[in-house]
Image 1 (tube, rainbow, N blue to C red):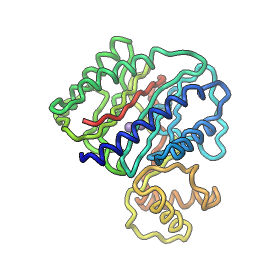
Image 2: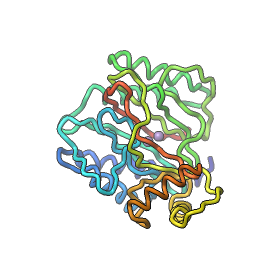
Image 3: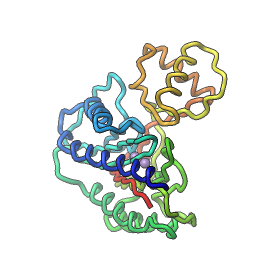
Length: 287
Ligand code: MN
Ligand code: MN
């Protein structure tokens, strides 16, 4: 990693921290998820960065990939466990950060457990250490609280305009011998649950990502949408909410055509299989 790259990562990380310092006071009963998402996404731009992926605001048993749609009426309720996951980039260099809050209360055991496990995990993520070692400390902290890590979710490397690169750092015990290397940018995230510890894909789908732009498209709306995506989001995930160049019905049709052709990838919401609640804590670090 050269000094300019490092500087851009550091700027993105700094802005993501600043945003979280402003988010805490917004987590209140009656606040709409849509307001919260728009506040955060606007702040990213105002602070001089760009949005790397739609703000994920996932409540209780939803672990990830919920972002409000245009007409979303969901409001925060007393006692909700809400994960706020924010992606920011500066010239393609990404900071990926998440915290969990509980509405109307100071903290929650799941939040404490996920924060403690992340702290321990970050001590292990150093050049020369290996991927499997991270899950061991996460499992240990989870067990001490009587919880489970979510075993099919993971931290990950970051690349320029790429949110998920090698290494994949699973939360659940594994045997991956891959070594961490100097110069890597790593987004480490811990998911802790009072359920069994697995997520499954569920509806709705609110986030999409360009996977293969070079497949021919027949319908005019789909071509229009594809050009719009390539120009505005490149290879970064985007929210259905952001797109206003087509009416809702035509947008749904064009999105499903692009998915069926293999051009777009869907990111369905992820729910804990046994309906356990999930807390997430994530930070981006440079090795
Ligand atoms: Mn994240
Ligand atoms: Mn991440």
